[in-house]
Image (cartoon, rainbow, N blue to C red; front, side):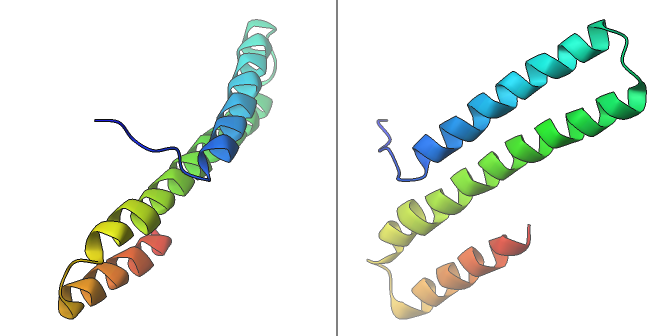
Length: 91
């Protein structure tokens, strides 16, 4: 199944490449014997960057793919999908 490129994909790729470089530097920090507190802080930053990329991807999918598919549904079902999309902001 061929997926379309969404407008957020280039920004997600950029964020993930930045996280990839950051993760490489954390590995070097571990190999260099840096303190655990510094390592944990840097790993947390990498984790947050990846999590944000994932959230952006999922929100984009919900907004575009699910939103487009819902257009053909009856109004009641469209409202349910709109509520679902709205509540996912709190995940």
